[in-house]
Image (cartoon, rainbow, N blue to C red):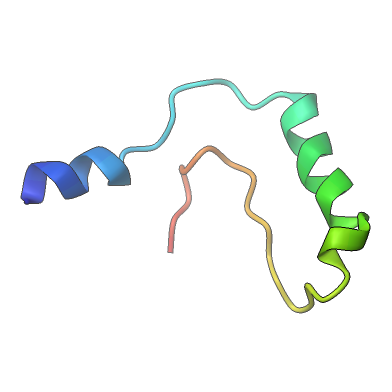
Amino acid sequence: MGLLLAHYARPHTEILTVPDIAAGVEYLVSDGAGFVTGTVLDINGGFYMT
């Protein structure tokens, strides 16, 4: 069980790119995010998880 959790807790090793950030911004300004309020969207590949 511990190994399974460690696998999912490991951050991605890819470099963050402008299209990654743009995808998050595109979602937030879309109609689909109309009821999303008071949320922090961390686009960081899992390097900062709470």
